[in-house]
Length: 199
Image 1: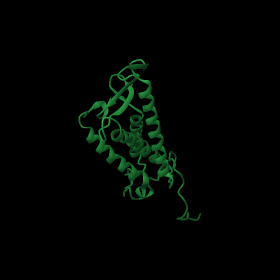
Image 2: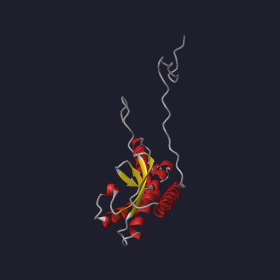
Image 3: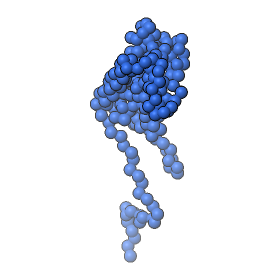
Image 4: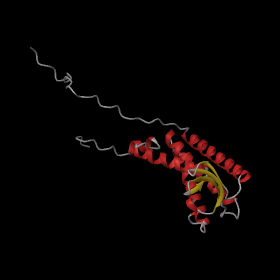
């Protein structure tokens, strides 16, 4: 009987499972437009709902929607979430402006659809908040943000806040999954360690 050629494959061992195919990402040069479009939708939705709240609600009066869990209550917030830093509106204006510039920079460079949506949500929320700070009363740069969505007795927010929270959640999830914004980032990322395999 002739010896088996060295090029022949070894017979499969019982219990062996095929190695999973590597996860791939899809890239598109249209991702910045997706981010911009998402941001625009957030800005329009936020400003329209604020316009409705100001024209339809009485300041300070709470209207229950889901009992004590969710309600509608119009307030004007000079600070951040939970009205923190109410006397430091200019600080939040500057911080929001920096956030908008950073969001624009990353949104222009993004090539991942998922990252584009996440960045668009955050950028849209930050942009509409910046507009409130700059253009609303009592003065330029110290405008009060219109809040009207009341969660229990914890805090009152708006549509932009929801967009920012969802975008931040996507940011954390995509980071945890190792999803990158651009193909260049995927190529330069250090591969994850695999047990029993040397790098």
